[in-house]
Length: 262
Image 1 (cartoon, one colour):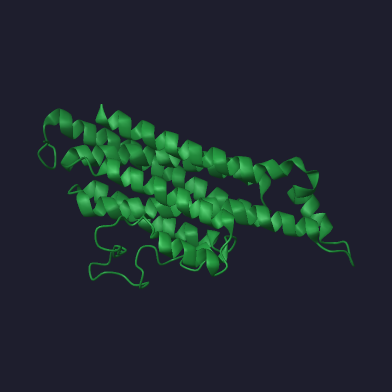
Image 2 (cartoon, rainbow, N blue to C red):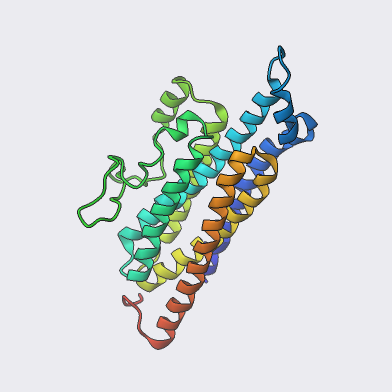
């Protein structure tokens, strides 16, 4: 029952995030001037302000911001999983999440707002290095706080330093969802945690693929390529999730769980 609750709460949370973002971003597409083809033609109009091109860049930025935050959330959750799991398959999967989503964010950073993209590539390790074992080190947070939680005082400083409302909304929603998911996953231990995390990752990547494929229709060709690459990688992650789910379920059936259930 708990596992179903975790999965459902995650899907609902991400759906709310996606719907809220979509209504703000893609509502602008009602204006034919916002289509990629029109944006390209507007750049050829000599002597006229490239207002259509600027609108297209704005849409690219909004989509990239949301994809960046979703991908960053996967990195945070993977680091959280590495702290709790004792299953080597789950550890390898989490390490793959860190590497692949860090690579994706490096590409999304070319389109995202500077407030988000300036730390791209360092999510796995704030210092930009690697641990002695060759795996990405885990990011640090203030004692007693989640990696996805933010200090309200810091938020005010960021906004005052030139942040914009859309970036702040993305960050705050992403932080809140990440905090709730970590709290729910934190209720589990051993093989129960492994199955809960893997199930959450399955639905999370279903959502990410859907977001990327839907957004591809509304952005520039350059960003389309990045989103397509991200969706293709996420589909591979889904296959890994399916395999993990089968293996973890088989372990339970055989009584070969990595840690005792409580």
